[in-house]
Amino acid sequence: MTILSNQEQDLLKNLSELAYCNPFLPRRVELERLILGKSNHAMPTVWSFHVEDKNIFEPASLISKQIQPLAEKLRTSFVNGEEFSPQELGLYEDLILYFLYDKYRGKLNELLVEYSRDGNHTECKAVWDQFSADFVHYTGGNKQAEQFTLLRDPEHMWASFFQIRRLFHYVFYWIVGSSNATVGLRASIWQSVVTHNLRRYFRSLYQCMGNISTLITGPSGTGKELVARAIGMSRYVPFDGKKAEFVTDYSQSLLAMHLAAMSPTLIESELFGHRKGAFTGATEDRKGLFETCHQDGTVFLDEIGELVPEIQVKLLRVLQNRTFQRLGDLATCNFTGKIVTATNRDFDSEMQCGNFRADLYYRLCSDMIRTPSLSDQLADQPDDLRHLVNHLSRQLSCEDHEELTNEVVDWIDKNLGPSYAWPGNVRELEQCLRNIMIRGQYRPAHQIDSGTRQEIGNQFMSCSLTADELLANYCTMVYAQTGSYEESSRRLKIDRRTVKSRVDPELLEKLTAVSEAS
View 1 (cartoon, rainbow, N blue to C red):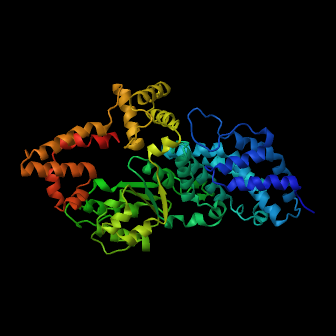
View 2 (view 1 turned 30 degrees about the vertical axis):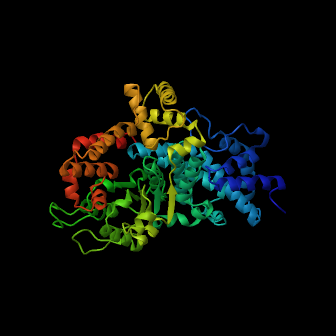
View 3 (view 1 turned 45 degrees about the vertical axis):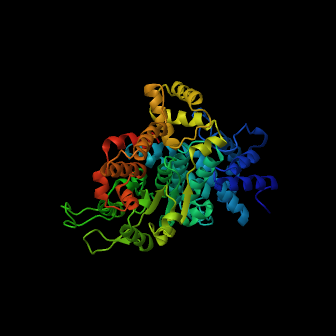
């Protein structure tokens, strides 16, 4: 005798796949349509945040209402001890997971806001008590719950639900756009955190994903730091049911460092820490990021290609052995967090030139994500320009964001046109928005600095520069392009202090307009 009819089995098979699928891929919409049938309203092919969308979760809520009677029916049969086949038991478990997650989605979002705002979690106990009661209601308690694969531990499921809610928030609301490239980026971030097999992740992989590093590549200004933030803020954080609180505050879990703006000595000290007297100025013991980062945290190293070989070796040891030493100390420390790195460099050429260690690269690229350029996004979906401008204007806390959006989009259409390449990507678009908001116009940076470069070229061709002026101009141009004294020193094959002393501040201000605008 079977508990489920053929029709109910078909429904729950689709629901089971929906519960574990990547929400940012088109398959999610297909499954929602299959489950809702004729009652389904028009839905977009993929989930993409638009400011005007108000009911993005309506299909999920409709599905929950549709399956609730079946959930109660199966719950009664299960609690009363009726015999479920292994397949029916699995389908019932997935039904409970989907139903409970949707029921507590709003409460999970409130917790997310509380933590991100001030670390406060006053409502956590009340919500946890409600969830625990529902968990017992549908599983029959600890003894009967042992029959399930995932529903054995309510604390683990609550921690998993909170992780999924955070992951959705930081991907959906921060990675904006409907182009194929952006859709793929959102789906890729999701996999980077919970893998392509969510069921297996919940079962075991959630415990070991910190050992896998992620390398984010892509042009400057394409949002690599947003990707890193989504990964770092969405890691699994265990929940302590007795204390009714998460063991760590997720909002403090991402520790970021921009390597291009720092000297090698400072980088070492910031990463590994130091003992008092380790170098001039080390007046006290200091913990570095690797020691400060807890096991549920993430260290994000932006512009990883800037690391000098000596520090590359030390970072390799951290990735291989999860150990390191403070500067000036022989004691060994353990690193228990996750490492995420980013670069806009071509590592193939960097490794061929001997600037970056191949063994370190292969440790960093266990998982890789590439951010698309803005021009690629707009070539596929021109309407994304308006959505991005609207999103950026709202981030400025501008009450007149709709009016500002219309003004910026109209100005771009009339003055730059749809074929403008946006060399500075989304960062340039943000600068364009601010310029138009303040001055009513925007002058692309490459137009600003082209005259300056042409002037330098004319002076060179006319042989009107002294040797000192020639060196100063060239050092300034290289530094304006790299933004790093270390990299400029490497390219010019002179000491970084010489580069720094030769940079002309006035000329640099003109040349770096492109960086500021992009």
